[in-house]
Amino acid sequence: MLLRKGGADAERVLARERGLNRSLTSRQLTMIGIGGAIGTGLFMGSGIAIAYAGPGVLLSYVIAGFIALTVMYSLSEMAVAHPTPGSFGTYAELYLNPWAGFLVRYSYWACQVVAIGGEAVAIGHYCNFWFPGLPIWISALAAGAFIFFINARSVTNFGSVEYWLSTIKVTAIVVFILFGAANIFGIGVNAVGFANYSADGGPLPHGLSGVWMAVIMAVFSFTGIEVIAVTAGEASDPNKSVPRAMRTMLLRLALFYFLALAVILAIAPWSQSGAKEVTESPFVKVFSNFGFGYAAAIMNFVILSAALSSMNTNLYLCSRMIFSLSRAGYAPKVLGAINSRGTPLRAAALSICGVLLASMVAYFSDKAYNYLFGIALFGAILTWLVILSSHLRFRRQYPAAKRAALSSRAPFAPYLQWLALLLLVAVLITMGLDTEYWNIAIIVGVPWVIVVSAAYFIVRSRRSNA
Picture 1 (cartoon, rainbow, N blue to C red):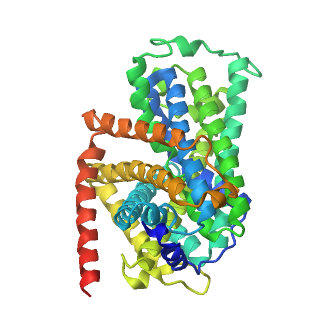
Picture 2: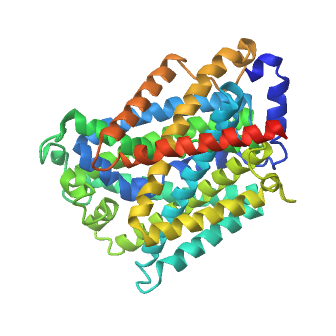
Picture 3: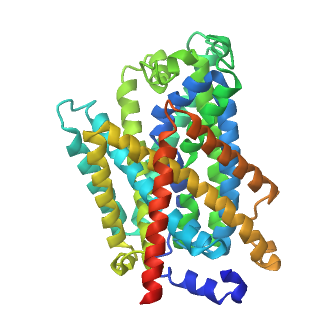
């Protein structure tokens, strides 16, 4: 393996990705991580999980939260040891093999491009709330231009904008939880209590199988937390800021997701909040109960900010993955160039072109977008599997004395990593067996792996013959 050659190859791999501007603070890292993990999935998509599990969705998010926690602790330990923008793609190359690094970086890039495209189209719909006659493609194009401008200027500018966009989301969730608690306990309005937890079939209306199916959506909701490890390559002091940001982010995410869902389930029967029957955003419902006539407009603004925040963070991730691939020789050399502000502008430009393509596909063809969504979902879970596998190899190969001195260490390793791996494999198997919704990820994901793997071996063969 690479690190068994005295560390020379490891230093070469890490050195090739240097040159980006290190200026992100711990506070910015925390909010960037939250911004990546809290998107429209919480505000609009949590109803899918509720439809599967009812009140049992809280258990689903506990299971998904455990997996996310294990992934983040594993990634944080490696990020402190090797703070590089290639992040988990570089770690896979170092501790597994170059093929794994190639596969996960291209898969993650495609995953995020599709996610941004979907958010761009969603923004078009959100803008129609205020401007009903405005074509969706205009709003999507404007959103894409805005986030490209933010990412193109400097990483400091990106961090500042993302900090405030994430602050809007966090503030909205905190206010929602507080007003929801007032609804539940009768402060200013009639108390709704917790009776809805036992309505329409009780806490587990679809049994434990429903809880497990909801885990799939819950896992997908947490994807995006990997951004903190990617930002380690541009953090001002990764040894201190990465562990601190990771701990703060995970605590806030756990509280936000769990408490927000607990409030939603208490205020209305789960059958009304479930995705198949929802007629009003549960966030709007809480504010409406207090007589806020502008609740819908306020929450539409918050959801619009959430979508912009996710787009902003995901474009950052896309550009760094392509930058890393270019520096590794697996993408055109021009994509590894850095401008005078220390930003991989060309990598960002390529990524935004992919976003525009995904946006057009999403707008003009729902069926085609389902396949793109399959790539996004499969790529997200594949990334977590590779992170956990890389960490298991990292613990065996990284010098024990150096690992003991790291400022971030994964607790109860490798046992939690193995358990999280098994749970993720079980999630993939379940997705493959579900013919109603989730099997699209496997149908698209397996051929994707074959195609990308074939591309890797072709590139490697040409490089060896050159």
